[in-house]
Image (cartoon, rainbow, N blue to C red):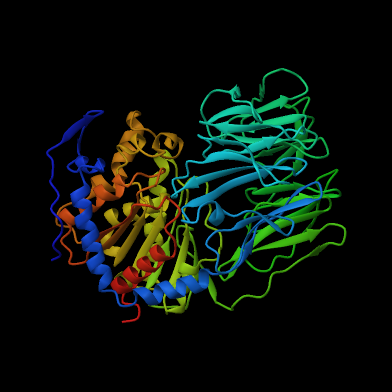
Amino acid sequence: MQSYPCAERLTLVEQVHGCTVADPYRWLEDPSASERWLRDQDDLWLRYAASLTSRFRWKNRVRQLSDVSSVSTPVWRGDRCFTLRRETGQQYAVLYIDETPLLDPKQLDPSGLTTLDAWQPSPDGTKLAYQLSRGGDERSSLHVLDVLTGEPIDGPIDGCRYSPVAWLPDNATFYYVRFRQVRRHRLGDPDDTTILADEASYGLEISADGRWLTICTTTDVWLADLTTDAPPRHVPQDATTIMSVGPDGRLYVVTTQGICIGDPTKPTVWHDYIQPNAPLTGLAVLDDVVLVSTATEITVHDRPTGRRLRTLDLPGHGSVGSLAAHGNRAWFPYTDSVTPPTVCSYDASTGQTTQPPKSRDLKTHHLTTSSGVELRVIGKPGPRPTILYGYGGFGQSLTPTYSAFALAWVEAGGSFITATVREGTRHNKQNTFDDFIGAAEHLIAEGWTTADQLAICGESNGGLLTAAALTQRPELFAAAVCSAPLTDMIRYELSGLGERWTAEYGSVKNPDDFKTLASYSPYHRVADGVKYPAVLLTAFGNDTRVDPLHARKLCAALQHATASSRPVLLRFEPNAGHTTGGINLAADILAFVADQTGLGS
């Protein structure tokens, strides 16, 4: 049996809604109290990692497959074109204006710890609002740059995490989100005007003529006529998700049933316009037509009537991203399992769509479980070492995408499988876990893999998914990787961004929600004497979304409880954030999974 660092088990028990909840590793929530324990875990991981002879081979191959050039969809402001480009060999993408570099994160910070989180040029293209954060903490500060001189104009302004920026036509004023409030800022003015004070995750957009400001959350919509001094008008609705005033002056309303149009002066009166075949991901109004995108399709519609004219020819069965339009042309990113993200364009005048270069030929299989879960398989039929990957939350669908991690695994002889599990929320969350477990059972029953060859991997909400699966059905898996996971669902609201996620998971304050959370909380489901699979928990010191305490607590609980000889390990990066693990992390995960599933042995 593996020898693990000593972790004191407290006799801490609390009563929550009349139920007894034990929390023996509460002390691991305090990073200072757990410093010695964490150092010992680091030593344990490093000793194990040193035994993985394939570790550096994985690292080299992931680096090679990751080192591809990329460019963003263009943003036009007048005659100026802004794009974000990454050349091979570069760590971070550089923002260009036309063909001239404008903003290079590496020049701003040679240490490589500063990232460019977002950017938005002014209507005339002479100014640029952009957001920077450091060390992956995503705590963005906003700056404003004079595009013509390269000199700073304003900022830094803190508290701008995930902030959209909507410039007014005067090129000196913009609406933005600071400390989760909608504010108006004028360049050089130390004081902002608060537009909406209630804290929320807001989206902002100003119409091309600068008259209309739309403000959206996941549940509410406001519309402001900026030619008046009236506050934004809340628009009552049942199914609206997005409102936008197009360049043609019409109000476009995206609902769960489709797209409607109306007059912004009468924002509660709409009529049906376009009914897409799948959930909408993008809308672009061109001079002559309207483009509508779903995750895997783009359709062209007559602008006056919304009548469907055609479907664009895509390079393959992949994914398309958000649409960008300028005049009668549109651009969209495309990717699939073997094609790095590339920007394609559509010219409505000619009807032509550009195609990316042909990528490597790699067989993809599509399977469906008895409960209707779709599985996308990259690799050959088995049984063979297999990684099953899932997410299942926050409305995010796992569409085909290029992954150096997956390609390296498949090249080495494994299978990489993505499960499109149901995105259950609150009381339906167990549906997500059931789908994932059902996918594993299906793959084993159909001979694609075996329990001794199957590993599950997930990140963030996917880390919760894998943690739930391994604690509910440990016998199904040889290994599990939980990256930046939530694991203590009784106390998740008290750290990171947990308090903002109650719509997804529910709140412990609600007795019914508590019952559901307690039923699947991975930390609380760990039981003594169970043969758990090999587990690798990864956590990051600058993660401001999911606190590393979740990984620490589950690690200690599993190390104490497991009756298996397979290791339970914690890999901690103190200077990385939620999404900045990178090539070293990918290589370590692949080496760990290969070791536990027998790939290459």
